[in-house]
Image (cartoon, rainbow, N blue to C red; front, side, top):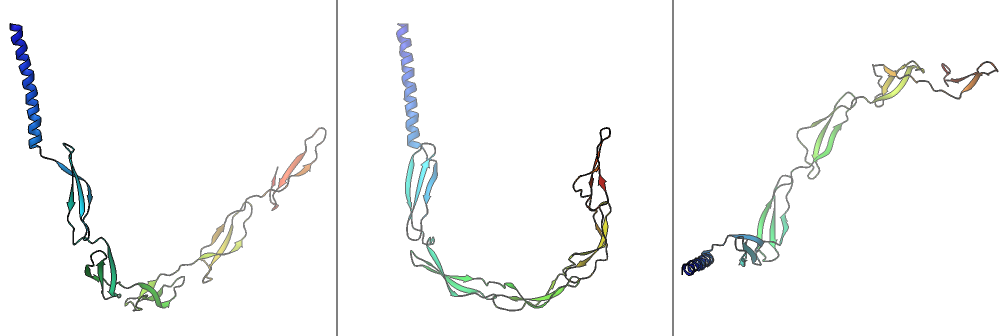
Length: 226
């Protein structure tokens, strides 16, 4: 009898647990609040509605809804000048929508001057700066303030040797500027040449009892390499 009672209590407990679990799932379904996130959105324009796709990240339920047309979102615009701007004066234009034919007036800013067309140019030299005036490429107006062209500086390199270098001794020389032909006050050191050895020659023939000797003379004649 006790075994039957115990079995009945266990059976009742299991049935009650299942009932409570099912009840919780039912309550969850009845009172669940979706946590939506937008996964795809097609924006609405002035001529066509948009589409929004959402999914609940808790229960994976998804939904699709339409977004009404947006009269201010013109996706297919073109621009046309009605009054061209200048360097100093703004212009006017219009933006029109190909889809709904809406037209919007647009103010375009002035270009601003494009400097670089030089006039009244005084060439710079090696030691003296030059001068110039800037004109605008577009309207040819002259810039009020002039500009200074930096002096070029000497371009040394036309050198004349005053003391020729040898294989072992450095020489000396003077440089003049390529542009103004002025001579550099500083003397230039010409590096020594170093030996340039030529073909080896036999200076002493060998005999039966003595070795011979060969020499390698420098082509400039001031050293012999044995």
